[in-house]
Image (tube, rainbow, N blue to C red; front, side, top):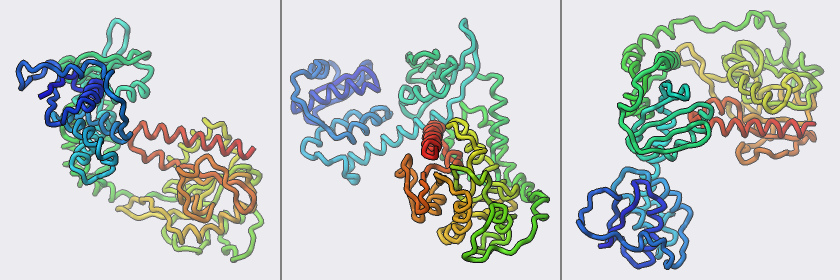
Length: 478
């Protein structure tokens, strides 16, 4: 029996060195025993394998698939006692089965991928459920958090917190290892005890107030909530103390929400002049004519439930036109495009990209708000291909009058309307697509997509790409 002692529970470099030497030396998986320095040794006085610490200089070189290294780097962080042996068994088998990692039905491969998935989930939960508490030391304010990750992911996720809280000094204490950020660099120290972290601070009440304000009783699904926010994390979350009461009051709160009066459209909507819809084949002479005629549009059935049609808005001389999907709840009530949360994201991104919104024309592929009623709340529904096709007539009229140099399709529905076919946004970003009227088409994300992303890191990356796309379109329109 060959015994390999690694320096720590997450000593991936040591495992790689030892595994390379063991495989080169012909040591079969069943003949190797993996342990960590300081851990109990079932084999008593057995000496560690000499080649495990020799640097592997005599071992002939060999390569392994990238998929294996990616999985192994995650599995090593799992708390399973079998992870070292499992990874070495896979490495051993790769000699004769080079495509092993692509066989999803293989027991070892499936186990390794499952462990890696659990580690990834633990990292995501750490990013979501760490709660800092304000403290002070000789250098001033500092923030300390106590967290008990399901797996050893502290060092993996620490760079995320360094990026997100770059200007504040913080420490995350865990039983495995503690991460510290001094606004300049990350350091790590041995694990700590929960008693080493502050128990409460003035920010606790803010967390509870925030959570109570965003809790939506009408969409309560207790099983799903506990899946996303497992009870094992509740003791470290200040807002968790509110959950039992919020759940108990959910039904009564929902009934009260349903009993409230529905939203009312602006009074000016009822005073809009009534005009006949523009007949098929007739070209509008002004944007004002389009805006008025949309109110009597019957090209599809969406007018039946919407408050009003919402035409585009902007100067007739705009070089850049933005096409969204459809009006949202606030746009339907206001009669203007992009005035709700998605519009606020668009405004902020345009400012960062150096694009003056006042010089652009904003509109939608579909002019009426498609939704479904949930009580008296109106929930967005995506327009289907027939509705997009029926409403393209209005968009063509707007494009014919504005004659923009560049048309930016915000999201897949807008891309279908502008380009006439399904167009994957991520595949065609940062490309100038020639349109039949000699203008250029650009596709990018819809601002509402950015609002729906649950992970803060993913949201920041997608927003940065969105700003890049707006800047690209503005340069193209120059």
